Image (cartoon, rainbow, N blue to C red; front, side, top):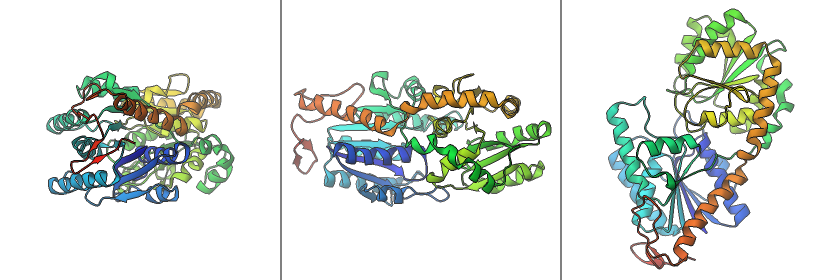
Length: 417
C-alpha cells in the first residue's frame, strides 16, 4: 500500500511519537510505501523530525500547516496538502490532530482517496473553552468526520465523548491504544541509582514526578498547591517536573512564593530517550491535566513499575484502576491529591503492588507493533470493501463517495494497485 500520514506538527508528544512509530512499522514490517507530511514544530515543544528522519521515514514539511487559526495560511496549507496527495497518489490518507485532520480529510475526500482515516488523540473541543469556540470546533469535527471512512480513538473515552457530541456514529470508531517502545520503560530500573544521584536525591527522598508541557490546562498549579500541604507533614517528599513550556517562570515564582523551591526541580524539555531514565528516579507519577485523550505518561510510568495518581479525565480510567494500578481523583482536587501522595510516601508495599499490576496491564496493550497491525487491518478492511466490487462503498456517516474504478485525482486516474 501507499500510505500518507498527515499531522500538524512533529513536536515531542504522544500523538507525534505514535505517528512516527506507525510509519516506521508500516515500512519495515509490512513493506508499505509511506510519506509523512507535517508542519513545522513550534517553540518550546521539542522536535521529532530528526527521529523520523533517522528511522528512514520519508518526510515533507509544509510551512503553511500550523496550529494557530489563520484563514489565508490555512487555505494555502489545504492546497499544499492536495498537491502532495496528487503527487504521492496514496491508497490511504491517515490524519492526526485537529488542523491536519480538518484540512487533510477535506483534501483527501475531494480527491477520492480510497481510504481516509483519522485518529482522535484528544478532542479539540472541551469544557474549558468559551461557548462559541467549543461550538465552532464541534461543528468542524462533525463536518470533517463525514469526510473520512473510519476514525480511530486512543481510548474508549474519546469515542464516548465524540459520539455524545454528535460528531459521528459509534460504528465509525475503533479504539486502538497508542503504542510505544515498551522495552526502555520496562528496563528503566537499572538507571535509578545513577539518575537519582545526578538529580541530588537520597534514599530517604520520595520523588513525585509529573511529565507534561508547562502549559495551560496541564495542571501544574494543582501539584504546587498540594505540595504545600504535603511537605508540611512529610519534608522528605520531592517534586520533579519534566517538560518545557511558556509557564516555567510563572510556576517558579509561585513555588518560590510558597517557600517550596527546595522541594521542586525542573528538568526542562527532556529528549524522549531520557524519559525512561527520569521515570526510574521517581517513586510515583502524578497526572493533573484537565483534558487529555489518554496521557502517554500513564502507561509509561506503569511500564516502569510506578504507581500513578491521576485526575479522572478522559481515558485515564482505562489504565488507572483504583486500588490496583493507582488512584483516580476528582479534577482540580487538592486535599485528596495531597493525602494520596502522603499515603504512598509511607507505604512502599502499596507502590510496589500497584506498579507490578500496572506493568502487567500495559505490556501488551501499548506495544507499538500491535498498534500498527491493528491500524493496518482498518486500512485493509476499507480497501477490500472497494476492491470487492461494492459500488460507491461508503462506511457509516461518510459523505466521501468513491469511484468504482481507480482513484479520482481530478486530473487523472490512478490504479488501486
